Length: 183
Image 1 (cartoon, rainbow, N blue to C red):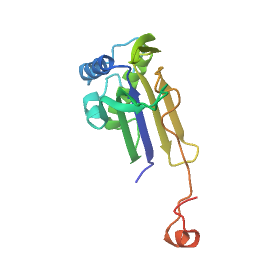
Image 2: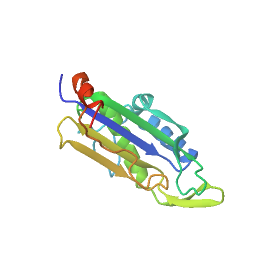
Image 3: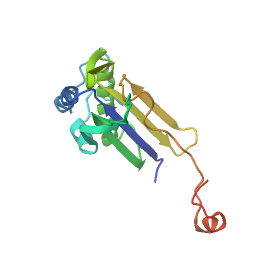
């Protein structure tokens, strides 16, 4: 069966132009040799993974990351985003599919280091953000096996959008005793 993890990540962009630039770059670099001063290899490989394949496994679009940030009237603002979740997956660096996703995250890390720029984020409102912001969370089977990576600055991601919750879940006989599914 092997060691399994729950994995999730989100990459958020300040506007559609940055989102489309990221998608174009991901498609262009897929399966190409890595020629970059900041990234020498990903998972020990000197080739970008198939980021198009990774994108096919994500949910992404121009208006999918909705947040009530800085809102007085509880208005939701939407931002372009790429989101992924995998439950009980074997997240081994040597796996091709993992390399594809890790390549997408390496590209997000590069974009997240881009210059802070003023972007319009509402009616006559601007905010300084990087070309993208990302948050990655992997929770393994062992209690202390938690990995988080993040980067960039985005007005709608002032806190981490994902958290780890460990809890005790009851099977049916215990639910009968306590009348609850979990503690």
